[in-house]
Length: 304
Image (cartoon, rainbow, N blue to C red; front, side, top):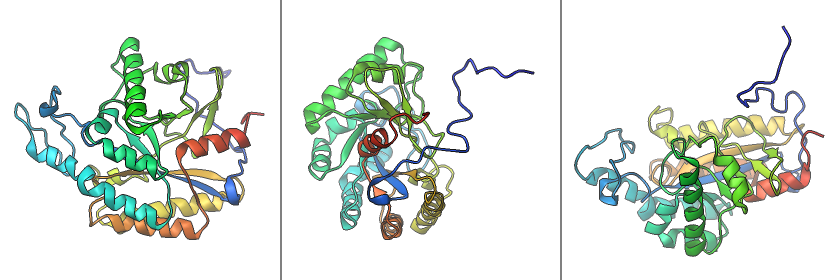
């Protein structure tokens, strides 16, 4: 039976056995991207005029038909206390992050976005609300992108170059981002340990894969992580393996963080332990836009 390309656009091959050998700055074997998700104020809440209350926080429970003061208070912890705790730990190691920031959250906490930018962190857009995009029609999604860009530019002082909507983009998302102009990358992919360059737009465009395993979200839901040391051990193990592979082909690693999750006092030591581990081993901890820029400079055509 002869092979023919899939009609659904899926790629099960990727770079195969011989990935491109990108050279990260200072000879680092692994580019580590710390993504700090800022969703506080963008969660669904009847008090915000949304159609329902958010159901997932420290517990999973949706309050129907009434304002959920409990859920709202849990989310508020992220901006009131968790953000500052995370920033202090990052500063301890001179580590720079990318804020995956919902535009509506920025409207509710404008000081947070300004503080991050002033301290060298990047803002990537996480959509308007902490929500999926798969059900949006093309006109709705185009307008959402436009409003998000204008809101972030107005409040934080510069527009986002990256985009990562909650889990489920639409079939139009990537094309709209490329058509909008000004976007360098998106992170709505989970299928590799290296970036992927996409051709066809007005400018080169990069997909920077995200990760759900090296992510503090595993303190919730699956409960894979219980103690801060669980998070640190898993992320350190992942880094060590990539670092070993990186002696031949340098790799990229994403660590997903949330102010209301890793920012809790019983978990934050896990982030400190991970940063101590990777900085001692020469990781390049970088903003996602810097990784995309370095990738394009080092691997102008990954298929050549």
